Length: 224
Length: 265
Image (cartoon, rainbow over all chains, first blue to last red; front, side, top):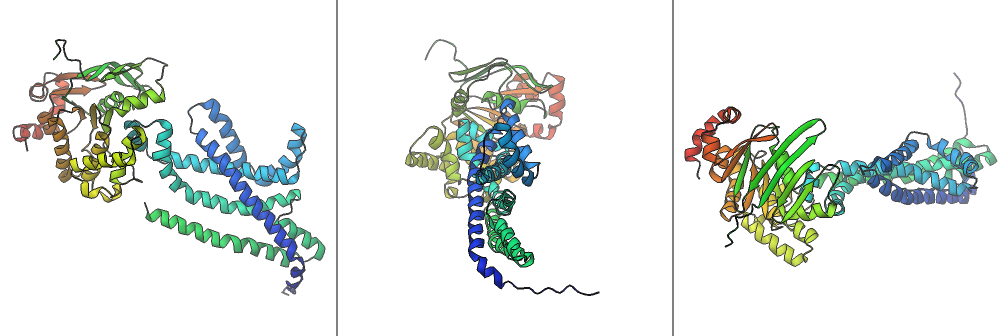
């Protein structure tokens, strides 16, 4: 069996370094931006989702499940191509990309927040109410301080995954890291080196972050 | 002294409560005079804890009225009291739970001062001073900075009692507060409750400690199947019960019944 021979040569990529750096900038911007917007969406939706009023919770459940149970790639394409047709507004790719990424991760955050709050024993609500705290005070002084501790590990996980998720906006020509990789590939016909390099850039950023998340998780466990 | 008959401190009138299809309380009425101790006994599932939770409105009765001191809540179908009204009602009705329910992210001191600080809006200094006094009262001044996870069950329950006391409640409700404790830790908690009784605190106890109920309570109410079956002085209800259901229940506590004579510490 003859082995495939291929001459690996990464040196040409040096020429394209600014393209990759620019792409990385977009990737980080999309990650941080969608985490920030997603956090706001997730907090609001997650806390409202705790209401017993189904008129309020039903649309929120619909939103959460629509975004959690369909592929992100499809959502991005749909929001870029189909949504503008439906509502008659033109959305630039950069806006559509950020919007979908935020809504997507916001749906996951909402469930993380809700899960954190409902994981707190009923006795904590009882005790806080029994000394006369009002609902908002119970949440603020007793439930959230405990719940946030439990939310941090899944929140960090979801945020780390989000950095990889942003690569899907390359499909609508947002110039992120992967998109630049595609550009370089089409100019040089050397996909192996290019995509390997792109993958390594993701890895070099994410691996330390996963270690950091693990460290945080250990520290939280020990403080219980 | 006024000539009018003294009004009860707690007055529960015709309280009904169902959880789904299960009717847990079937029109219960109960009066607790100021400064007296009422013990609720009965088999599990008889509605004792639900009645207790209705007195401070942790459960809202489907129907009926609950009055504590001069605060009255009238529960009618489909009409829910507002959050603010419930909170101010509960602030003056202390409750201690079977599983302590201390706030795990707060030290003993912070647990006790939480009410004065966040509900009464006292200044930090005053709240802390009051909390230290109460911790001293329950014998835990040296544990002020300890987190609940570093306290024994008996210590946790004493902190929980101090936390209830910090709101200067007019009554305190005790929901099986020694049931989750190792036997050797029960005594220290009962001692604190005994001390409160001697100070004239109005209290309602749901308890399985028959000897303790007999010793401390002025009135014992035996509950079964969502109603109060028999109520009276401990000697009547616990020693000479009239109702067959009370008799059957107490027969199971026969050994403790024999210990009544030597119940005092």
